[in-house]
Image (cartoon, rainbow, N blue to C red; front, side, top):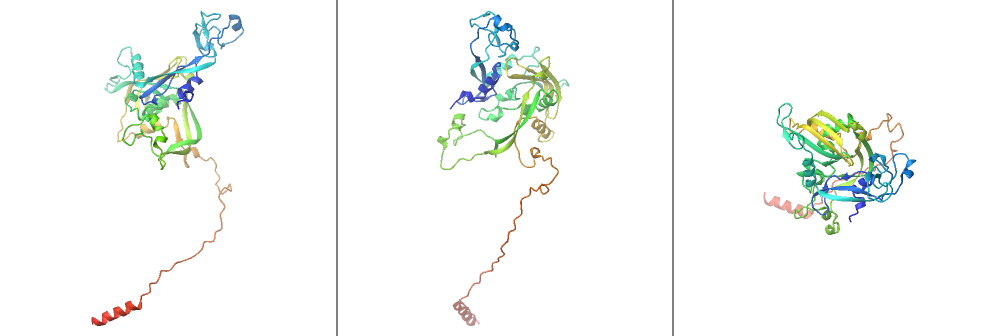
Length: 381
């Protein structure tokens, strides 16, 4: 059953109603393909307030008071409304109460194409997706553009267009650290733009095998509705489940807008085992999105068959849920005493072990067989 109040885009917009929220790509339930949801809050009708009602109030003002900027209002929304009341010809604060959330689904390919068309460089040489010569005159540089949300999840990545809609792991909730580890590391530890947070999840879910796209017995891909159809595939033998309960260390990141500074932008130059380039990070006003542009982006290929250094760089700045087992860093014991000294060793039980042995069985040879063999021996002499 589709319950919109449980959808991520609804919860995100309800928590920040003053922003237009855009979700990460996901597979449409009807099997249409990869889509994004653009959602916006619907506020309650304008409360009529006169200048006298708002004269003794301090900022931020409640709904109905005149305003100049969004930050002047408690709802963080200042606009010109057609609602009747005093000062109807001026900008007024929206009411803080949210009546609902509207959502619009858009195909991801269309969303990316429209976004890329609006981001053209003034010289049309270093626009998003274009390749050009590097400063050292190598011919393999390009400009990479990304959109990510306040949880460091990619909303737009040029590689998402090439990903199969059935393999959601390639485009749904992909972390910025998995694509641009050097930039993510710089934003975390140098600019403090991302705040790292760790939590323990005692009801986590781990998998035996990596998640793969679902197929039917005929090899036909399944849409989400068919995957969730339990009764259609129900049988006498329970189906194999790759997931199981476990304890996990959940690592997440949250953006810190104050790190953008007065200019509202972070710039930096990075060079590491994965790539090199000069990047810009800024927020998109009134949305939950941030823009990352990397000029002179150049990927470094592995000197051997696999770039282990690149893999490690991206892993240490990537969010996710990781299984906790004995011997990992999450189980680091700071105590210097032993279990025996703390009387935590199990009590030994005195058990009497029974001592028994077995012998080989004897075979009884019949007298008839002995006499027969003796006669045959005498006859042959």
